[in-house]
Length: 151
Image (tube, rainbow, N blue to C red):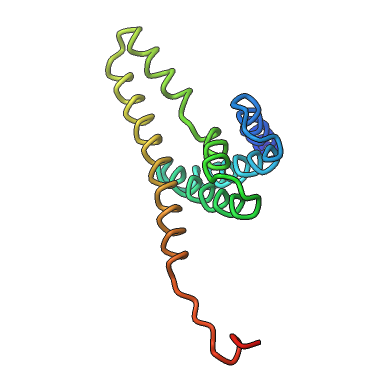
């Protein structure tokens, strides 16, 4: 039951982000799906592996899904990828870090800020890896035999 609630919440968070920032309304469902699938990957991986690696993996999945949606719906990749990473952004962690700074609890604040920084960096790394793989796949030449070319 918790997984279903997590999926629904992440879908609506991603879709609401699209509405707030005036992305094309026709992409609402796809943006919600990319956020939901990315969060599902993170939610299922985080208990088994480190949070940073779970975030990289989930963001990579979001990047691949975004590339797929961009090709199918002929829209920029950034629409789907930015909306997809919204559930993964460590906003609560950054808030807690700043709160600890204000409370003069510097040791906890630095720990939380470092963790938020690492998660943010892992989001960037996951998107970069998916883009690099996409570029490599596009550059692979497809050789069609001559007998099939003439048909």
